Amino acid sequence: MNDQFPEILPRLESYNTMRTWRERFGRYLLQGSRCKSCGSLWFPRRDELNCPKCKGMELEPYRCSRLGTIDVVQVENMGYPIMGYGETAPRLICTIRLDDGITVISELVDAEKDELVPGARVRMVLRKHKREETGAWMYGYMFALCRE
Ligand SMILES: [Zn+2]
Image 1: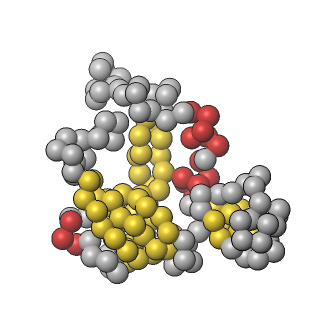
Image 2: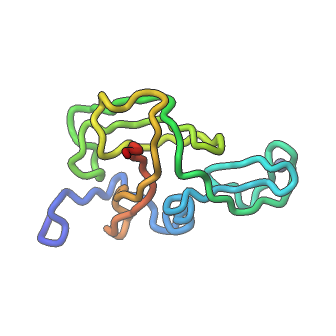
């Protein structure tokens, strides 16, 4: 801890910088893969791999829907903030079914636990995730309730 990093700077669980760089499009844009021959959608991306359904080798980048509905709500409460994730405790982890059928597990932000019911509409937002090895903050998708 110092002036630049007022909170505990975790090194144990920090993310590998090279890997977070390679996965940046998935994190920022919810970009997965679509098979050109059978149309199956995959998230996270399956670049340089073949399609498990039809064994096709051609996969193209695909931006998943940013809207979805909550399937399952789970409260992650260990009694203390998770190392590297700031002061947020407990965290609300939801299984989200996106409008194009892809399932994503993510944290729900700016909401109380009582508001999160299965079937509630949510949208993707960009939030701070965690620190990388270098100490830089990693940003990425989280979800928030759709409010009119
Ligand atoms: Zn396929």
